[in-house]
Length: 119
Image (cartoon, rainbow, N blue to C red; front, side, top):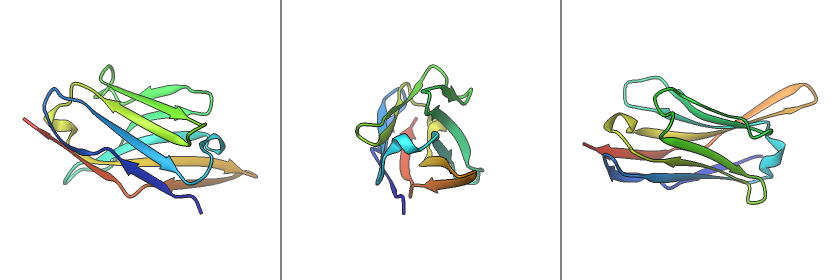
C-alpha cells in the first residue's frame, strides 16, 4: 500500500514563501503523474501543479510564475516551491500520485497540509 506524507505547510505573510514536500513510501519512479492539489474552505479541490514521469510540468493559471513543482525519484519525493504567496493561496494542499499497472489505474492521496497566508 502506497502512502504519501506531506510536510512543510504553515502560516506565512503575503509575499512570503513556503516549500511543501511529499514523501512516498515507495519509489516515485513508478508514478506516471505526481501532482499537488488544494482545497480552500467552501471550494472544490483544484489542481495546482503536475509533473509527469517525463518531467513535463503544468500549472494552474493562478500559480504560474510563482510555484514550481519538482520530483526527485532518488529521494521518492515531490516538492512544491511556493513564492510570492497570496491570501487566496490559503488552502489545504494535497499530494497526489497516479500509476498505471497492466492497464489499470491506481491513484493515491496524502492526508493534506494546511497553508495559511495572512494578508
